[in-house]
Length: 191
Image 1 (cartoon, rainbow, N blue to C red):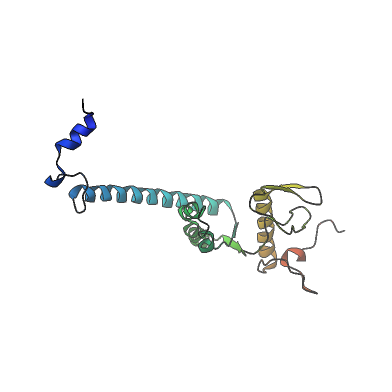
Image 2 (image 1 turned 90 degrees about the vertical axis):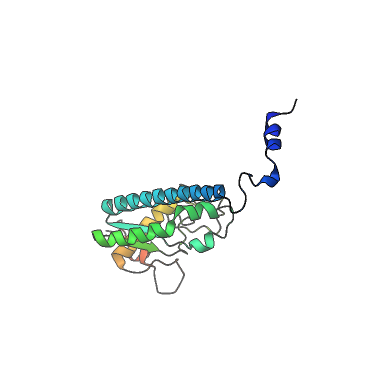
């Protein structure tokens, strides 16, 4: 007894030109068209999502603080390349910027070298090294930080400093006689 799948493949001779998907056949063109339609639908859905998200963000916030990331360098990481490319960060940023102009809002781009993850949002201590696998860490002041929440707090503070002082956000450097924009504001604890 011959298995059913073998019987079918034996019934169609290979030389008759009736193979399923040969180069240049009409079936191959139809398959490519289907794949192209699926990709176009995915692209449209992503773009629609980004439009809705950016519109909501711009309507609800006066100032939007984003981190200026180099997507080109991050795509070089092979394990993250597809996820980063699919996210459409450059489209997201450009949509935020032009919609902020429409609604009279401000978009502040914090410098990519600002140590938002390594800087303690409670006391301002800068950790020397923090590998990517470290998701939570405890500062010398005793505060336990989630890496992403801490970075968000630091980016918000940096964005507020830019809005208040008008200076650019650069990493804190120890230059004599000069303070960064974040340190120029008078603290509220002083009488």
